[in-house]
Length: 379
Image (cartoon, rainbow, N blue to C red; front, side, top):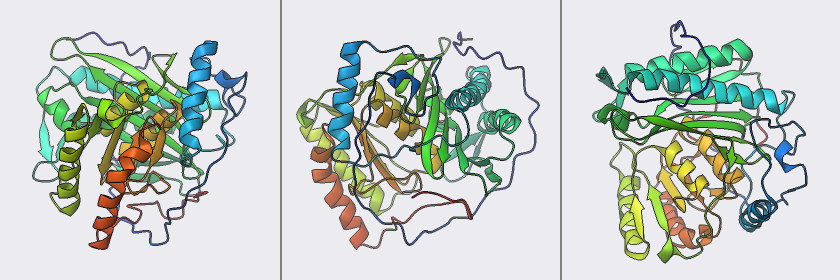
C-alpha cells in the first residue's frame, strides 16, 4: 500500500449514523453586483488580517510577497472578493487547526481504502457513491462535532445537520472525484470549507497524488486574509496573461442538458485558442491546481457548495479571481463558477459570459441552488 504523508495522529473513529438528506432550495432574490475593496498586505501578512498567528505557515520572502500582492490587487480591482472579512469569535489558529484536522482525518479513511476493492452504489445512472465516501464523511463529522458542537454542517452524503442559528456552516465533500477514486485514477481529494455568515473563511483540501501502489497526498490550506499554502509553503497563481499560452481546466456534470452542451462548445472553443483544456473530474483538485499555478483557470456549471467552498478560498488567497460564469459576484450557493489567476479572467469571460447569458435566456435556472433555512448570511 502507498505511503501516506498525512501527519495527523487521529485514532480510528467509531462512525455514527449519518443524518438524513435535504431538499433543494431556490433563492429568487440573489443578484449579481460588482464591488471592489483594497487588499491590505502588510508586514504581518503571515498572521492574517484578523491577528491570529498561522503557526503552520512560513513567512514569505520579500520577492514572493510583492508578487502575491501584485496578483491579488490586479484581480481584486476588477472582481469582488468571496472570502469573509472576519473569522468571527473563533480564533484563527483554532479554526484552521480543526479544518485541517477534519480534512486529514477523512483522508486517512480514503488512504486506507485506496488500494482495496471498492463497494460501489449509485445516486444516478453514472453518479457513483462508495462506502469510503460515507465513512470519510462520518469521520469528518466526528472531528467537527468534537470541537464545535453548535455549528451547522452541510455534507454531500449526509445533508444538513446542526444548529441553523450558528454563524458557521461547514461544507464537506468527503471524497471529491468519487468516480476517479473508484477507478484508481489520480484526481480526487477530501475537501472541507467553512463559511462565516455565508462567506468562506477557512479551507483545507487533501489531494491524492501518484497512482496504484504509490499513493501520496498533499494538503492545501487557506484562511481568509491569511494566504494559501500547500504542505505549509505559500503558493500563488500563475502569471500567464495570454489565453493562447494558458492551460485551462473545466468539468461536466451528470445532466446532459443545455448547460452541458454549452460547456462542450466552450471546451471546443478554448481548445482551439489555448495550449489545452483538461477535464480531470474533481472540482476541489482543479481549483487547487489553479491556486498552485499549474493550471491558469477552471470553470464549471452545476456545482454544489461542498464542491466549491474550500477551493474558491484557496484560489483567492493565492492571488486569483473568482466569479460566476456570467461575471457576476460569486457565492458558494451559486450554480456556476469561474476561477483564474486574475490576469486571464476578463479575457475568459469574453466567451464564457455570453454563453451563460444565452442559457439564462433559455430559462436555465441560475438562482441559488441551496441555502440552509434560517442560516444568516452577510450576502
